[in-house]
Length: 156
Image 1: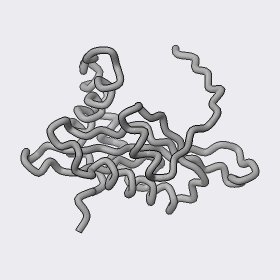
Image 2: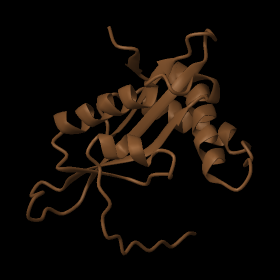
Image 3: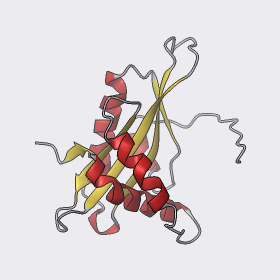
Image 4: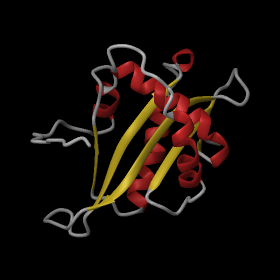
């Protein structure tokens, strides 16, 4: 039996806590969690729709009942097709986090395996993500490679 399971609406607060762990690990300092309350209802709705374009996989914390040890989440996006991806399905991993006291146990790898299989089952031709320096070896071991990226962003 796998340690990894699909997140359910009751996990939403813990999913947000682990997302904040990831955000804080990438920022210069701890960020605020004031946005959690506003985000919670939307996340619960998304977790309640298992056939949608969003998936979150979690590992229950082995020492803290009711807490999560790890989170892996992503979305399936549609883009107009092209050579190599005529159906335009692209996976995007946007959140991978392990509770600091549960690291080095293979939870992120196991969660990524589940998410990548979810993408494959839905016909994604590629999966994109942004990697921190600490996480890059994990992603490279799963087959991810660097790509030239001319990305730009507009924030409203």
